[in-house]
Length: 49
Image (cartoon, rainbow, N blue to C red; front, side, top):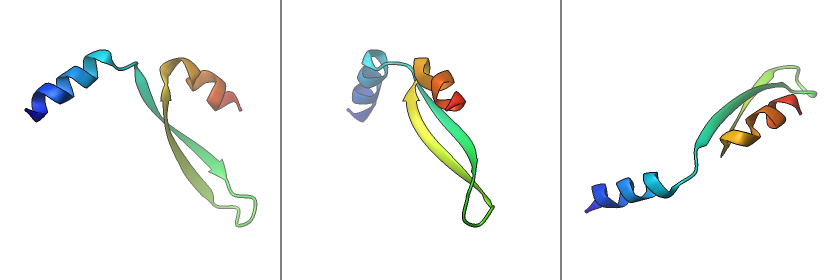
């Protein structure tokens, strides 16, 4: 039964993308990775920010 639920969710959902952005911490100077799941149309605007 779980397979049917997963298949149903995949067909009705929008295309989602996992974005990993590397940000330099202002306090320590070390790099931190920020992960976010978002709609595929919003990826370019998020990375330019």
